Every structure is written in C-alpha cells, then in structure tokens.
Image (cartoon, rainbow, N blue to C red; front, side, top):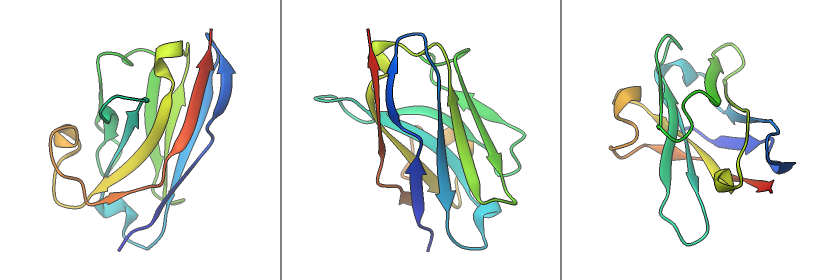
Length: 125
C-alpha cells in the first residue's frame, strides 16, 4: 500500500513557475514508476509526465514538453514536477500516481495503482 500526498500548488501569474511535490509513504517507493496527471474543470484527467523507477527516463505530454520537468528523489520518497512558463491553460488539479508493474512510458494509457488527492494550480492571465 502506498499513500501519495501532493503539495506545492497555488496561484501564479502567466509566465511564472511552480514546483509540485508528491511524497510517498512506505519503503518501496523505488519500485514504482511515477507520474503526474491533471484535470481541468469540465475536462477529463490527462497525462502530464512520467518518470521511470531509476529516474533515468522521463516522458511528457506534448503540451508541457520543454516547460515542465519531472524528477524523483528515491532517498526522500518524493517525485517533483517543476513547471515553468505557466499558461492559463495549465490551470487544473494536479495528481500524482504510482504504478508498480507497468512502465513509466505507459502510465498515460494504463491503469495506475495509487493516486494522490490532488493539488490545485491556478494560472492567471
């Protein structure tokens, strides 16, 4: 069992930056591929980024490529999402997810095992 707790959301002006964190409980964090997703009002949840268990491979949605960076610190059981050059269309609730058996590359199209409660990101124009 893994519990995920996101933090770092808030209100920022367009062009600004935020860094989200997702802290995981348990001693098996390095066994999980980790990802970030988001859901805007009235829209379906969408994939944002994912990172492999070692941190050596990362994957991004086209809409955030070049602006967002996913990273992880296995010693701290934490995955991060650095978001730069934020746009109003990035406004959403951001969720982190963990996948035990699947690959990070597939996190956007597969069922993931655990989800956090989400953190709100609001980008004003």
